[in-house]
Image (tube, rainbow, N blue to C red):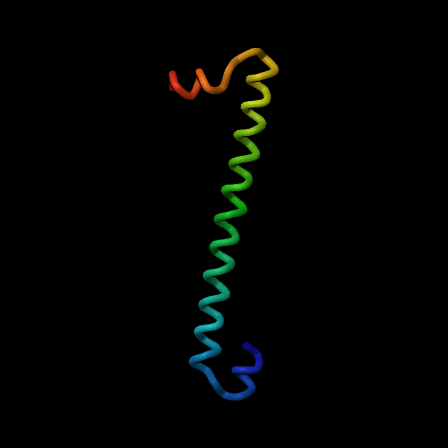
Length: 61
C-alpha cells in the first residue's frame, strides 16, 4: 500500500486498504467463532464431569 501511495496509485492503494479491512473483519469473525467454540467445549466438559451427556442435552434442547 505504501508503495502505491508513493507511486501515486491512489485507486490501487484504496483497493488494498479495503482488502486489508475485509481481512481484519474476517479474522475477527474467526476469532469470535473460536472463542465460542472454546466456551462450548468448557460447558461440555463441565457436563461430562457431572455425568451428563451433552449429546442428550442437545437432542432435548
